[in-house]
Length: 414
Length: 167
Image 1 (cartoon, rainbow over the protein chains, first blue to last red):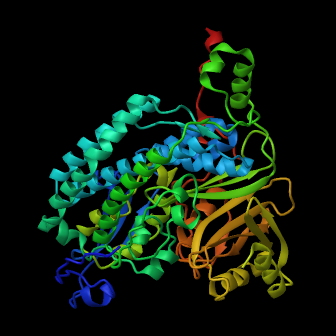
Image 2 (image 1 turned 45 degrees about the vertical axis):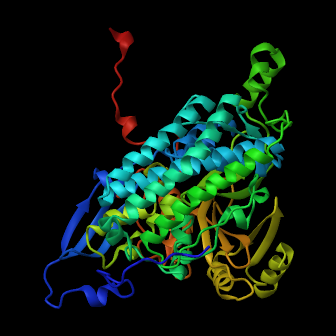
Image 3 (image 1 turned 30 degrees about the vertical axis):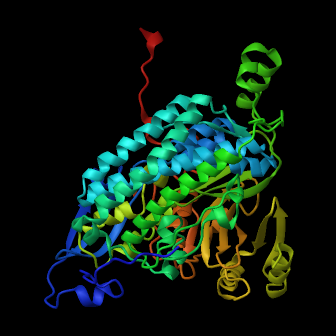
């Protein structure tokens, strides 16, 4: 996909060697500024200690952990099924994708194959969640940087999808719709109808967002050439998702290690080339179009069939049977309270969430509970590059930096 | 390069440090001795046939009954070769320190800090080894160790409970 380069050459900072050229020759005292933990643009409780030389950032030290709840420790105490609602609370604006990543990891551990229809349902909902995530990012990032209008438009359209989630599983944000081996329930005809309507409604709205932002001089000036990271550095820091692809590195797990229904869909992975905030924004907007394409293809290809793998020792019985059939009720109760017996071993399974690679590393020693569960949270790893990416920029650009990673503290601190 | 070839290549190059390679569910996990960890990692990072340029995660597992109690787990990915490898090493509790890999992968900085914070494993030559998720002055141990109680410890134990039956 060709990248339309419309940028001007006016840069306020030198991205290559910020320290050497931007510091004033007259050396004065450094100022230490605590930003956060209650700053509105930090999207949660994040504190960054900024060392300033005038208005330039000399060094910034993120202080994490204000939202640490010990999720990994909690995982060791519950059964595999019981952990699904905890994953909702990791990246709480995109719960579906966390459920998806976790369920995939456990399925890899248990060697379960998910039926075709369930794979399509999962892919559709995951892409709907990606749209929601990118809308949320676009709205809040623009709001932080000084373009308020697009925030209302994004959230207007996001509401439609959240209501759709509500109808699907009874919750707007903490969804827990994915199950190990499949999904909790099928689409109704009303849901399908609403989704199709949305697919027709949405693409012109993306064009609208783009017009609002790209004609906005403040937005363009504050994103182009800001928070630049080179491809080598981005790879070395372990960045992922649009943050990595903004630097032109072609790494998307949906293509690199195809899973679910993605190999059956045609879609492209947009790549940036300058590695700045503007490129990451451009990628996320393009991914909105791609998500619409993927959902359309899935809806066309999807056939009727079971929505849960038939492995009674691991997967849950259908809910209707639980209320009418004693054996199913016992099965459900035992799976939740005692768990299923997992084979001893260890796996890592990464999934391309909209923020980046969300991975679960599970160590099992047999029995119903994970012995160790490690969450590879993209937000946490992106914060590792914060200092590197912020040096030499103006203090106001710190706001752009928080947004450029699409950071959510629930996932970062776990 | 298949996973078996990858494992045997490592075994040839590191005859002294190589302990075992396990392939399970399509994941390759190689265990090496602690003193060769950095050399093996450097080989994985620099050798053009390996080219593991991307660090996925750093983790640790606590096995309290074993002689070498802690297991440090690194996971790497090669973006060009589309391949994964997991590199593991064991450290005893009395001397739980391994060489930091921050000189090879910059992202290892925060990930190793998290392992230090949660499990108490220290990393030699790490530029900034401080707690990251827990408070800096947290003195009640390392939360992800198996002997750390799930409900936490420390300040809760100091609460005074009212004896309701005494009234």
